[in-house]
Length: 236
Image (tube, rainbow, N blue to C red; front, side, top):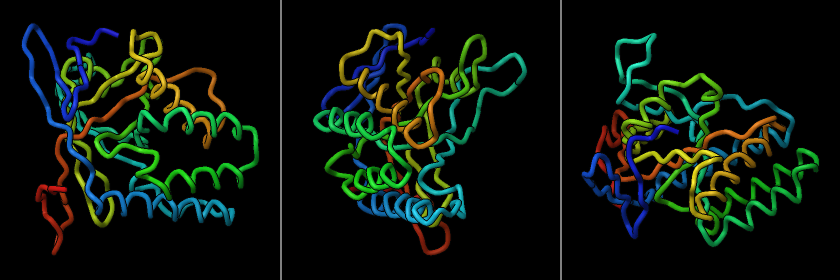
């Protein structure tokens, strides 16, 4: 990948180095209100699947609308872009091996067993997952094709993400692209493996692996209208 900067995760922050200049971005934790909303909505969807019902809605915690800026593709004149991404949780270093092994051991079992596994994951968020990041895949950048999100992120890693639901949350921070051929540390390689595995675990086998995106979180806002936060920053 032709990334124009380097990202280094440190204690409580991520450092972005570009053209010899360095900027530190704080890492903040998702608040209880976000985690409760996100996990409870995911469990509702799993309850529907258990009853062989198609989910009644596709918004909510799984679909984050990701805004990026930085590059202009040849078919566009504006570098600002917004795209809906399937978003999941970022495993802790101490739990990622367990999560990967559980999915590998059960990936050939039936849907009811897989739903049970995911139910356990989401019911025990703080046991398995970090609060200072989210996770996704760059599904459509492949071969000679580059999405606008990808082109923006290789130039500028800053992002903003909004979730369409009630309550409504916005998170902002730095996005880290992890390519299978990258020279990354062991945890990042496991994050790449986990992201692809949990995607295929529910959606079925894919013939190739996808670039993973770690969304480090530097700010969280409550954007619920009416009597909600109306864009107010949340301090955990």
